[in-house]
Image 1 (cartoon, rainbow, N blue to C red):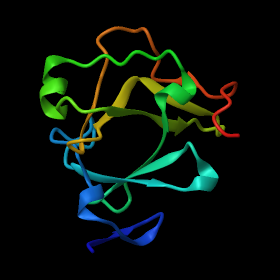
Image 2: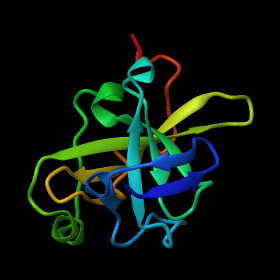
Image 3: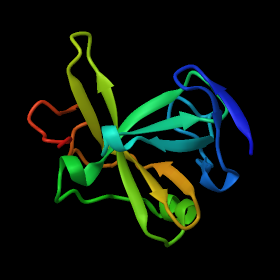
Length: 142
């Protein structure tokens, strides 16, 4: 099995079948195209999106519907071409401000086609959702 050295998890062994491909990279991180999802039952539904190319690049994420149950994903034609037609997992990337308050980016979720293992960050053209959706009142963990 391949291995990658990461800052947060040390040496990480992963299955090639588990690798996700972002053909266009992520906005601001275009050189990072291969990632793996890491989950821990104790942290569910939180997951880590770890880069396989940049050991220090790891995002904390939540399924968008655990934050906003009625969330509607908006994909462009180009996004659909990249992904395929399989079932998707939509993740909101999390960030913390200088005071430690967490927010979720619902404006541009990561959308993963579970059949093809291809992914995009689907940036919405509208402002229906925020890139700083507060998690202070969202019951994301049980």
